[in-house]
Amino acid sequence: MHLTPRLSLRPVVTAVAVAAMAATATTAVDTTPSHAAAACNGYVGLTFDDGPSGSTPALLNALKQNGLRATMFNQGQYAAADPAKVRAQVDAGMWVGNHSYTHPHLTQQSQAQVDSELSRTQQAIAAGGGGTPKLFRPPYGETNATVQAAAARYGLTQIIWDVDSQDWNNASTDAIVQANARLTNGQIILMHDWPANTLAAVPRIAQGLASRGLCAGMISPQTGRAVAPG
Image: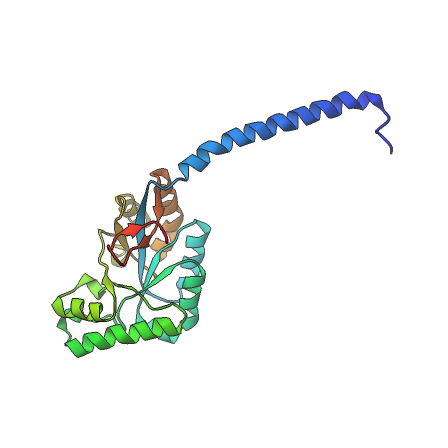
C-alpha cells in the first residue's frame, strides 16, 4: 500500500506529530521533580555483619536492585571458606570490612589472640579479592585498649554503630524498616547478612531513605562516619 499520495492523511499525520511532541514535552517536565528528589541531602552507613554466607547472593541482588551500597563486615573464617562470595560483594559495589576471624569476645583474648583474629581476616579477605580492609567491627561491639591497639597496628578504623536493627534478635521486617527510619546524616546501622527479615526489608529501607533525601554511603576510615562514596 502506498499511502503517501493520499492528501487526506496529512492532517492526521500532523496531529499525531503534534501530540507526540506535546507528550515528549510533558515527559521532560514531569521527570524533573523525580531527579530533584533523588538528590542526596545526606548519607547513612548500611552495614551487614557475619558474612559471607549462603544468604549473601540474595542480599547482594536485593541491594543492587534497590540502588543501595553497603559495608559488609565479614568473618575471616567464612571469607576463607568461600572467597568467591567476597569477590561477589565487591563486584556488587559493596565495601568489605574485618569482623574478626571466628567472632570471639575479643576483650577476653590476649594481645596475640586479637592480633591473630585481625591479621588472618585481613589475609582471607584480600585473598578473596576484597582488597585490604580499612574498617573493623569488633564482634558484639566489644572493645578495649588491647583491641583498639591491634586494630591500629593493621591500619583499621574501629566502627561500632548508632542504631541496632535487632535483626539478630528476631526483629520483624517492620521493626528493621523502622530502625533504618531513625538514621540521620552520617549515622551507621547494624544489620546482618543472614536474617530473612532483613532481606525482606531491603526494598522498604531504600524507599524510606529516598523519601528523606538520604543515600547509602561509604564509611570514612578517617572519621568513622557515613559519607558520599569516593
